[in-house]
Amino acid sequence: MISPGTETRLVGLLGSPLGHSLSPRMHNRVFEKLQMDCLYLPIEVSREDLPTVFAAIKKMNFIGCNVTIPHKLEIIDLLDELDPLAQRIGAVNTVQLTNGRAVGYNTDGPGFLRSLAEEAGITPQGRRFLLFGCGGATRAIAITLATEGAAAVTICNRTVGKAERLAEEINSRISRCAQAIAFSDKEQQSAAEEAEIIINTTSIGMSPDREAIPCPPAIISAHHVVADIVYNPPQTTLLSAAEERGAKVVPGLGMLVWQGAAAFEIFTGRKADVAIMKEEVNRLRTAQ
Ligand code: ATR
Image (tube, rainbow, N blue to C red; front, side):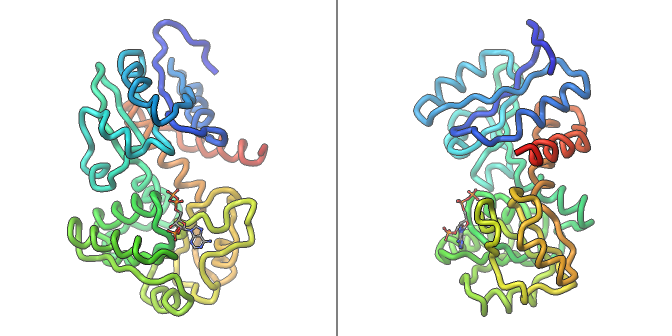
């Protein structure tokens, strides 16, 4: 790691709790590799202290920050400008700070898209997607897919009302590509027959509940691409089942790395070294 001096530029990670975040080490490895005089710092901050801490950060030598749970919505009121995609998503995970001016972005959806492009050679335009879940990550991915011209975005969630609300919002504000379905084997089966890309955006399969799977393996066939945003474990039960059935798979570590790479580029204006980011994340994962 660099030894900080008076010229060192800072990047912060604002959230609580920050316990398991891999972002500080991932970014600091790239700063080191590219010999940049920058330092990425985890800053644990409560909801009530966020306005005060963010006001102070704006006055210091920060070039940006990442924002995580529970501040992705609340940060919006503290910004000077919001990128149009972040506005549609309604959540910000990356803030660029230039001369005290704060601009908010969301790199979760674009990060997912980059991992899909890099690992499966897929761009969303004209494609049919089936998503499991309807949390914050689903919202970012579904809205980004619709914005990029997906032909169909089917949202399958346990609480179907949440999926219906998101589908309605996408259809009325972005494009008429979305529909909601119930979280049942039957609905999943017929939706999978229509879909080309299946994405798990729930926490199902995350450690320690590694055996859990969001759908019956039988709905997956060899023509599918199956992506999982769960990255702990890196190879989920869903991905193993998909591989056994001949489908192409996209593991969650890709989204983690590419959302970070997109944020790095917003902070610094330089291309991130994605190979180094991946190497660091893999090293940290195996050490855990
Ligand atoms: P995030 O904001 O990180 O995406 P979240 O808001 O906690 O995470 O959302 C998790 C999603 O996983 C939710 O859509 C949740 O379904 P509900 O909306 O019905 O709560 C889904 N999920 C989590 N555990 C699940 C389970 N065991 N079965 C089905 N869905 C599950």
